[in-house]
Length: 357
Image 1: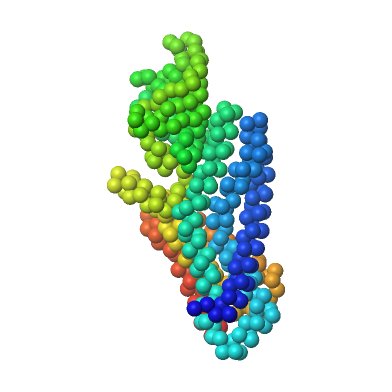
Image 2: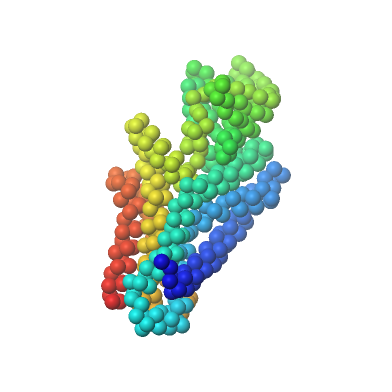
């Protein structure tokens, strides 16, 4: 049952988190757009860069949600503390545990929404953003080897720039070699679709450059070409999309597949556990914020609370980023790498709240 106190606290918490998230994501979005403008040309226009930025914003919001929840809680609860409203509530017989529960309710809603968007919405928007940029680069003939992915099959090396949510691949470069590993043909296709009937990819707008007897080069254009390969749409999607941008279901199935094949799946397991435990990350950081409001930060200014929240949030994020590669190097469980910062945060929050009581 939601009481008037629950609603009052929820309004302060949710509105503060929304404002903080809007400001941080807005600043990050402006910075991202300015970076993209440096790559603008006649194909990758400023409008395309703007669409790329807009579609990247949900992913940025998802990544910044724990930090925003912490800072928003410090601001929202801080306003109540500064106005002595928390003191009045406690004087009226509302226990600290009851106030913490009132904070936990709206935060749990945010955590649940974060979990759902990590499966639906955010992965699609991130893939669409990549597709916009890759499509423009394909039109201009620019290939960024840092994007997309490479694949090798007998006598051939293939680079694919991106795959769209509807299964279209963009910027397909194929280098074909003879039995003595000498390059004899290179081709570039702007796009392609997978054919279930033919068990391969139909490539469109293909430019082929062939080496004839190592003496001359022959170029030709094909409206359509067939690429016979064992790579399916699902396999390419996993190869091309970074683990952090895959949905939870995709991470789970591909991690299992890699384990069955005896291949290291640590990076995918890390991404899976980080997504599954993201709600607990949010709750843990918010509990630290609540503990600080009842304790060390009760009488400080809003600016000091914001700085404290940013510092704590960054330390939490850096610890996650450091433990991820450490688990791969030292060989401990990806679950432990994802869980350890959360457990430490909960422990710190409980210790601070115990001191206040």
